[in-house]
Amino acid sequence: MKKFALMLFAAFMAAGFTGCSDDDNKGEATETVSGFYTINGGNMSGKIPASITAYDYATGTATKALEDAFFAANEIALGEGAQQALVYNDKMYIVMYRSNLIWVVEPTTLKIITSIKPEGDAMSPRAITAKDGKLYCSMYTGYVVRIDAKTDEIDGTLKVGPNPDGVALAGNKLVVANTDGQNSKNKYANNGISVIDLATFTQTEIKNTKFVGNHPTEAVSNGTDAFVIMQGSYTAPDKDDYVAPIIVKVTGASEADITKVCEGSLACVAGDKLYVAMAPFGLAPDKITYKIYDVNTFAERGNMLTQVKGQDSEIESPNGVFVNPANGDIIVLSYYYDSASNKAFTKEPCYANIYDASGNFKKRIECGVGARAVTFINEKIAK
Image (tube, rainbow, N blue to C red; front, side):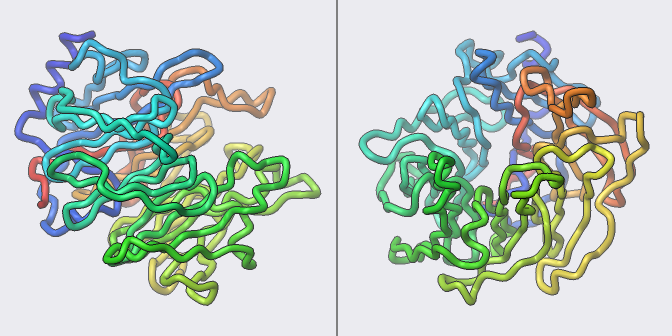
């Protein structure tokens, strides 16, 4: 396994990495994308650790589903609860929730440079983005920390709402989804959205509005347009207490600055397009929809992809949507699905379906357990 993974890395040398993210690396145009990593969260109840799968476009090969490219590079385990990875200033930051650390690695080899270990009240990192030499990471204990990208040290800590998760840039502001995720018995009653002014590193929290209260969890952006995913009731559509997941656009720090775009449970932004999957809990694969919306007008611009039932192009239980910034390829991560029990196989390897920019199926690759994020591999990193 180690030999195979290192062969993939050799193919990636002189490459850089980015994801469908909102960091300010978008200052230069991406020239090509040579591959991608999938960040696999593992499964705690099954005692399955996190891992990274590496895929090379040129050869069409990937590390095997139960192999870990991070372990191949470092001969130590990635850890528990991998969330996502971000490339910024020639370094890659891997966010580890349950291990309570952020790995800092060389993007082209995954070799460890250092690690950031949160201490004190601000712990359990969830999501990360970057702008103007600073990284911003949500901490599930109720904070956002600011990290100096040169020293990789935390230089600011800001208290936000309970259990923050997704973060997204809206120009010079940072939008944070405060999930109140550890308060399920009270239906996440204290959830909300924090809008942070990056210049002053101060926040305004928006709570108890007609949209905020629908359980915000994830946030996505193209650097300018920020969207928050509200997961609703976490019940199946045929239940009496069902509340549909929705996506809202956040343009400022007041209730008037929050606008509903559409229903949706997974999303990614690329340029002026918002890619949305509507896959609420308990919905059968043939009922899930995949659409594209305009980030400004919210007009529907068509279907995201084409599926054929019973073939590899069919997605069973999606867990993430991502877009190749160079050629528009659409990557959908998914669990395998047991139709008899209407449940996903969460302790088994996932897969990534690749579609072209027009939504035509290209191929499927196997990836690790709990695949939840994609980081693309570029030949040139914008700075």
